[in-house]
Length: 415
Image (cartoon, rainbow, N blue to C red; front, side, top):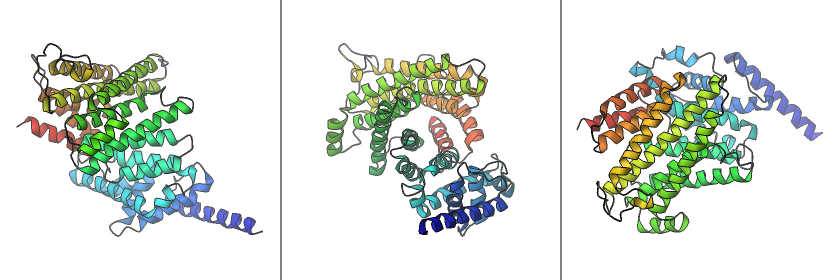
């Protein structure tokens, strides 16, 4: 009798939450009828904000339900308008802070498992697209907690790796702060877990390029940090015992990224020509993997130019840069340049990929390479950086961390 009474009370609460939400947001819909109360809890948390609760709730409604775009009508949202862009960015940050502080139990392993796809959507909308990166790792970690032991664990781990990698690259230059170095280590651990998870459960991750790409980028960042000497001796000894030396990490990163490129290329070639949406998706992934390999070679050159034992630009007999089969930093730079140009060619071959964040990032890294190293008759470094900045502004807004990163690179190129 008690159990039946509890079920009736829960059903009544779900019905009340559904009624209240649809009164405020007629487009509201959830995939699982048992999640109305959870959604109402999220809206109740952000609606208590003392600055502008209606605005915060409107942004959350847009992220979850779309359609109405009430938040954009409220602020006259236009990406080109600085005041609207600032408000959007600050609101995304504020919503994520409230969610992780006020709804941690609901979003973590104590909340309903069925809410996990909703949380991934929030992470994508507010953090990856909205630029709210300060608390993005916390939100991603809560998603990992909730997804633990389920089929969603792989994607949740990769989301965490992606967040940590984007935070690293948005800083423009390698940070020596302890918490930032810990994020690099966490990214490798999460990426390794995701790959291992995929091998054990149908090899979903290892058969796809996304896991390999983000793991390869994480390994590259850790190798770069280790070779540049930004880690203390204790941390270096720990990493050497767990993952190998900086040279070995570079070798592992290269293997993982080259396998990602090949996997993505095969998937793109196997795509039905009539399926435009899937073809664009796979072309974007292929180009992103090739660009990640270019960034890997950029880090190799950078590590040798700035590390404790720089290698001659023109090579020397017996030199084998990090055991990667190249004899000088100049050769590695040429490989990086060729990979970036190949990635841009891939993106340009599909109309749906030209105006994409993936291409904007590849242009940014290509311009960074051209501006940092000497090439024979090199293209202008400013042109790809300026195009990248314009794309980032249009796609993500002027205050997004990735946009600010490109702006810093452009500023450095003027000096």
